[in-house]
Amino acid sequence: MLLDNHGRIINYLRLAVTDRCNLRCFYCMPEQGIDWLSNKELMTWEEMLRICSLVVKMGVEKIRITGGEPFVRKDIMSFLHDLSKLQGLRQVTITTNGVLTAPLVPELKKLGIHSVNLSLDTLDRNRFFAITHRDEMPEVMDTLDQLLKHNIDVKMNAVVMEGKNTADIIPLVSLTKDLPISVRFIEEMPFNGVGSHYPALNWDHVRILAAIKEDFPAIQKIPDPAYSTSYNYHIPGHKGSVGIIAAYTRSFCGTCNRIRITPLGMLKTCLYDNGVMNIKDLMRGGKSDEQLESALKNAISHRAKDGWEAEKNVVHESMASIGG
Ligand code: SAM
Image 1 (cartoon, helix red, strand yellow):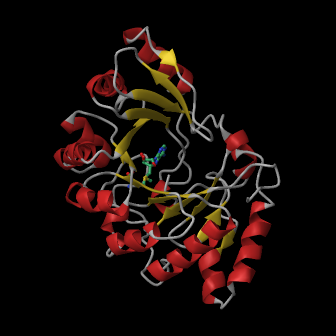
Image 2 (image 1 turned 30 degrees about the vertical axis):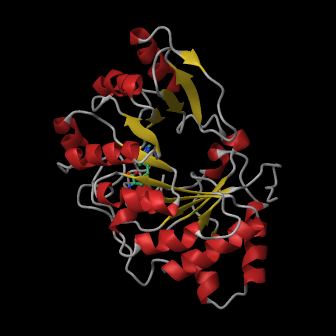
């Protein structure tokens, strides 16, 4: 079992396989994109597989593949195939914007991927365009259909933004009436790739819940699964559930079980830190698995207590370089 210096279990890795994305969500990156990493700077699939295999041996049981948009990187399916075969890895999950995902769903199902986080901030095509700068909403809805058809668990993630999509809160919650999905609302975080931008958090988790309660007064708190980052709720008679993620308020750090690796190979022991060591550089410098393991253990034994401590003196980059 892998424990950090605060006694928290580390059993979950979020691996961002690319910084590139086919959407331009304004809260994540500037419209013109960011300074994309060159292919040489990106970790190779072999390097990623090596590090995944190592962390699984150390105690990681769940790996989430994220990005950028994971499905824009060539050969992702073959990587997922290899990853899903790792001994000891209990769960492979994916976070996607769903634009390219629909045709791949049958294969994902075959690989044993049983849960996908689908990012969708609005059910209105014009607002989708205003937020993402792309007109791809039908493709995302197609992905939702395919995931449901193939019995893959869906968590739909929506960032709540003043003046952009608060009119979508109730329609998104209403999806849970007939669909067995979890719709999760996320507080906006300061990761839009323009360093200086810090959103005024007009819509924190308390206000989001209050807005839902106005239309669904019968909504009930349900138990949160272990290590959950969301406060979870159910509306009587609905097939799905609702979650609220206090990503900015950071109320879940006390049970944080996750580490992140960016496409550059940077290990982050907190979403809000700047990266604590570059695992790709160590691998390319010829370090053995034993040396990598000891470097990882050392980093994990110096984890910040919470996201407030971790972000001291940090200028936040685009979420596409981190993986959410
Ligand atoms: N492209 C994939 C997707 O859209 O799901 C994976 C990467 S994306 C960076 C992962 C998640 O981070 C998405 O749900 C996205 O909405 C969320 N995200 C990005 N920037 C954010 C921000 N500034 N505040 C809150 N969530 C953010």
